[in-house]
Image 1 (cartoon, rainbow, N blue to C red):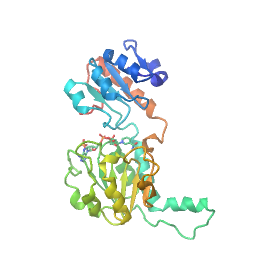
Image 2: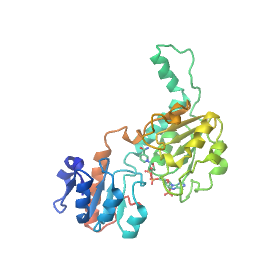
Image 3: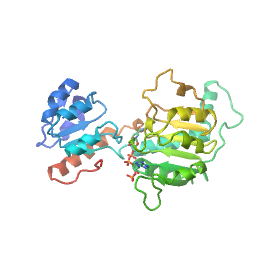
Image 4: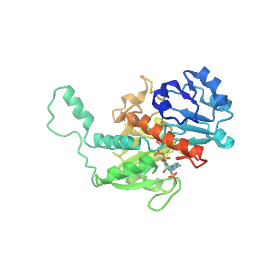
Amino acid sequence: VMNAMAAPLIEPHLPEWVEPRFFRNAEELFELAPSADIGWFDLYQPSGMDKAIRLATKLKWLNSVYAGVDFFPLDVLRKRGVILTNGTGINAITIAEYVVMGMLTVAKGYRDVVRSQDRHEWLLDSPGKVELAGSRALILGYGAIGQKVERMLQGFDVEILKVRRSSSEGTLGPNEWRGQLGTFDWVILAVPATPETEGMIGKAEIAMMKPGSTLVNVARGTVVDQDALIEGLKAGRPGHAFLDVVTPEPLPADHPLWDVPNAHITSHLSGRAQTKMFERSVTRFLENLVRFRQGETLQPQVD
Ligand code: NDP
């Protein structure tokens, strides 16, 4: 069962043993849900996800084009044994490129450079004087995105420490990074939004950050205590925040965060700054269909 908007991209590639059913709105989704073995979740999904899952009593596999898992009632899916596959890695490159863009934007004061062009004004000096080389970055969340960020930043000679949930060689565990927080010029958030990561960068963490450092968030707004961040930015700790994700989204036009001069907001665009996402998602889905048919493990599964 999938949205009719996705049909032209997927339908021609489906094997003959799959009977696709397409919906155009929530009512049609609720009507089709009880007959579905497989669900496809994408940008065009109408609201009512929880209800659709409740109705989909035959559902064995739900495929999402997104990396984020906060759209889904994970406990319900787990309890019912429904496999969830997601889009982790599919737009990791473009998101990592956005992270680097954010860091360079801040380092070179690029926003002020653009503003000077708007004013037709020739600057006599650079508004940003930071070199990435030799600076220190903490990558919180060393998955598909975090690993791509590391590879790119290695090319800039940035010294990197990374954190994952299950610490392994060369990485820190979820509670081993706080003590060193004040030593980083860049703190990059690439963790999933889960109960453990909610408010991971709270008032205490913000107070620990190095003055003048930059917080980069491409994860989810809920990972950061946004009110504390606004206060921190006003006090220069951190010196900048490059925020692709905020709370709530869309950020209301009168929200105070828009006017914080050292906050750089990019409207959740990092993953969308490319055209290959759907194509890559469909390829992954078709590969998993073969595995599904043969009773093999689907990849990547959300645990
Ligand atoms: P992955 O699942 O590949 O990686 C997540 C990483 O976070 C893993 O290394 C995991 O550890 C680590 N992690 C999880 N919980 C914790 C914790 N409590 N403390 C420390 N580390 C933790 O996901 P992706 O890299 O693909 O994506 C990450 C998130 O980015 C997504 O969940 C989504 O919310 C967001 N995202 C944002 C987009 C945007 O447009 N801005 C687009 C795509 C994703 P371990 O390796 O041990 O499992």
